[in-house]
Length: 98
Image 1 (cartoon, one colour):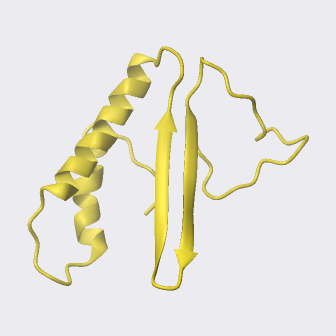
Image 2 (tube, rainbow, N blue to C red):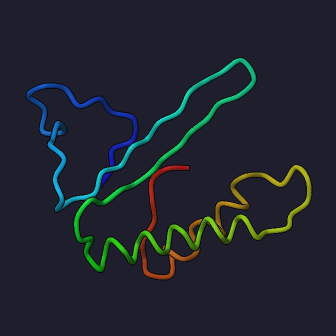
Image 3 (cartoon, helix red, strand yellow):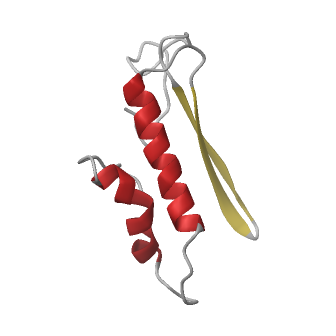
């Protein structure tokens, strides 16, 4: 699984080579004078497993669930988070990132 905010250094087990058998996750972003961005993308350059496709489909369902929500102004993020995680929770999964 992904490790939140790490740096892979030479000689570390975290430093691995790209190949067509495993996905790669890129977590990028920046802080600017008027806001912060956080962009996470996952790619697979080979034939992804059924499990990988299933989890990515559930994450997409979470994005769609939040996108389709109509909610009052000032609704706290943790309330919306339920809709992002619902599809994963249905199969007993979750992710450790807010």
